[in-house]
Image 1: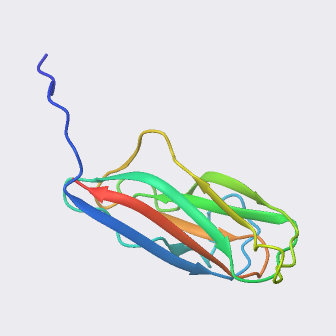
Image 2 (image 1 turned 90 degrees about the horizontal axis):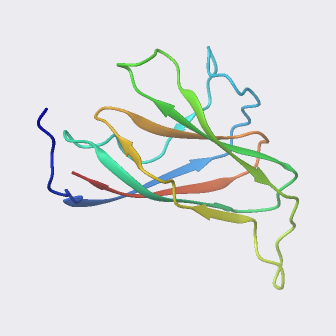
Amino acid sequence: MAANTSPIFPLTPVIGIANISTAVSARTASGITGLTIVGSTPGTNGQRVDQLSIIATGTTTAGMIRIWFYWAGYTTNAQLLYEIPVSAITPSATVVAWSYSFSPINLTLPSPAALYASTEKAEAFVVYKFAGDY
């Protein structure tokens, strides 16, 4: 069986940004609305996601940020991929807003899959996707 023995690297850097604030309490995506795409869909040869960063733009209460995977070739609904707990914080001149960053291990999106984001509470966040198209 032939295998690719040469490493491949992303060719084009991609930064995806999503502003989310619509409350979506569901953990299953059947029939829900309010999901926001994080940047664009991957290029023709797919996309490697290196980091996701999320920051609140105001006061937060305890809740969740959810990251969803959607690929029309797999399903008609987005599927829950990650849940990130949000803690209650009131930002000020001496208190930073809630934020969270993580590096998904081996997260490669085929074309035309996409990542979507939602917040459990109607609070404002910015979600960044740092990636590279192959």
